[in-house]
Image (cartoon, rainbow, N blue to C red; front, side, top):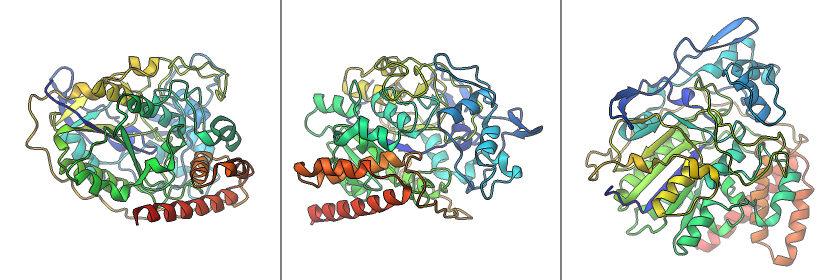
Length: 493
């Protein structure tokens, strides 16, 4: 294979299933494995969920915004995949039918404003190709993987850990503030075998990796070994990559999460379901066009995927998985006795390089552990866990004998939302233990520690440990955001 990849880019977005984003796109192309004509595996009218004697088919188009956040914690995904009567007590996962998406959405949110029974079927709907022109153009121009699954049937943070480390260290749920304090402390979230950042840093001490973020609190910064100095504003991405030399082997890109305190993520570009997809499409377009028109295009590989399905329907039943082998059920922060031998719901994944044939469709199985596996293949690194050792690598999609000359320099413009999302303000007195809020809180804590004298770090830890409510978290995040902004501006000045 003549392709020599020196720069791997990863863009990890939020909470969208494959059927929801690309299942109704009608994309056709060439099978990556057989070379024969094929089409992506999308749903048809035969796929339904039933709830209260009403049938809800998989259909399009999707009308955004969705009024409430679909649930996607471990018990919710259990119901979505196995039906509302499913019970899990650890060990083997129950039989999967993908039959409980509507019942879970209805049960979780039926009392919330805007989610009358007639809207329950919204969880089954997906975008048409014209609604997502950027993503569809990118998928057609390069390779789309329709067998890519989240790494466990659970929420964002453990799935993102798998993308970074082929393991979540046993974490199978969204951690609480107390758990993050106990597990992370100020040194960062530890993983038994370390992360792909550790691995590439050992092999390439110079210019190993760089992080760009739409805000100062990227979830990757919760990891041990990543500090405030490693977080760069996405506003600098274009200039850095477009310069005469960009030496970083791995570039990790996180979106702007918008209103993370209220859990709506409105105003960001992460494509979280309660926000609209337009700004996320704009982010994908900016990342691609920057790399495509840079001096390093011919040595680059870009992976665009979503951390988990966010409660949105997908018709493909997830398969089994290889356990990472670095943790035991019911130990540490393994709340449900989950052994990590079951994949989660399918998510979109698009792979971009001038060494990939246009119109490639890959039906082979992948999960987020395929990200470290690919990086290991590209740079000759050892495996981190049993999961990435067994995972498929997208490096094998780079099949061309010479670089493409027809790669589009630009993608279409994104479609702005017809109806903006409605701002939701949660009560200030609500518990801080909601979704990813404790993780954002601890990224902020690590930033404060980096800006403080060593002797003051115990006080920083105690301060965050005392945060109990959403309002207290909001105040703390605003304060630290202002401090980091001032610090970064001073360094640039």
